[in-house]
Length: 452
Image 1 (cartoon, rainbow, N blue to C red):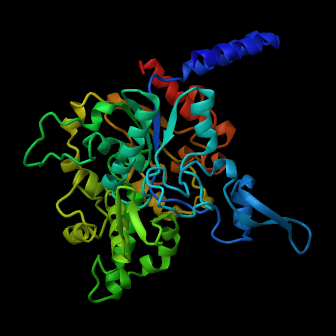
Image 2: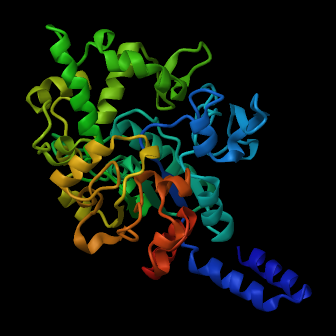
Image 3: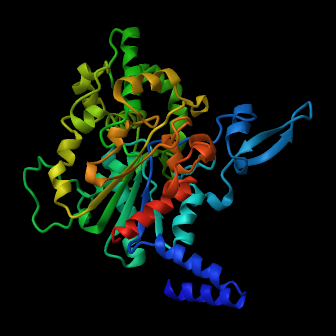
């Protein structure tokens, strides 16, 4: 890296731009940390556009994703006929191929990337960091995702020769990163607080992590996951014998599963599998179980032991846990606070909140407003309180002007800054002003200042 910087300086001197290049090198040093950076992502994935042509997609989806434009019949406007990620972004997760198991495949070319190219380039090319991006199962429990994340962390260590990494988790990626520290290095086994026998001299993944940065993480649960399970639970009124595990008669699942299936891995026989770590063919019942688990682990009930007062499914909690394959499991068993406090990993959190609601976010303004009234400010998915770790670990809450939209949860994926972030005049002032890529650069600067 030093040689690369020296060559860049020499080139600038030859061009007579020494001052400008010196500033560029200084800027790089300010956001280049001493460890590889591993990014781990949010729950689910989102199609660029469900169908085309579609006026809403033409208006909201960044134009770079359109592969074919056509004038409408009146010749007044252009419609996009095909949406797809550009070739130069296909290697960003979610990928069509599995880095760790070549036999797995899928086609997610028509889906947003977990982290935008702008964010990745800012951290890698502009700041000079070694950046690795996890491609965890999008609809799975935190344990399944953490075990997949372990593969990416070990890849980063092997590729760079470093002894530790910095893990930046956005949304559910925060839980993935935190749970990662409780896995063994050798085989990814979860060592929980209720383990009958504590292994001696077993290397833990916590020893491979210098810091965990939680960005809009659902560290005390996501209200949106609770709302979704509420909606699913209401179906019991339409069926006398309704049960959580009955996917065949679950109307929400049957209507929406086609949106989920493209994101699942398939083997060479076109059978669905869970991940590169679990290659057993999955039935629809298995897939539904993981989908339930992916929502359950994001609830306040699972993360803290207490549900929101307005949930109506808590009375069937035991049944829900069994249906999700998580009987007698909760976050406090999987990762007790004391173990996090003693594992030598540094933890930092960043939160966000919205003010004015944007209908184009695709969520219910009424429900979002009601949740704010009952539970406090949130970012469209989780309350500010939920996103924040302990006071000494919390760095910043992104808010902006109270007269603007504030910062939506998905702003921090870089998917569409204009849609999910405030207008320029309503952004945060000072260090945190700017784009999602600017935000991540400031996170890196903060880490450098903290000694990383």
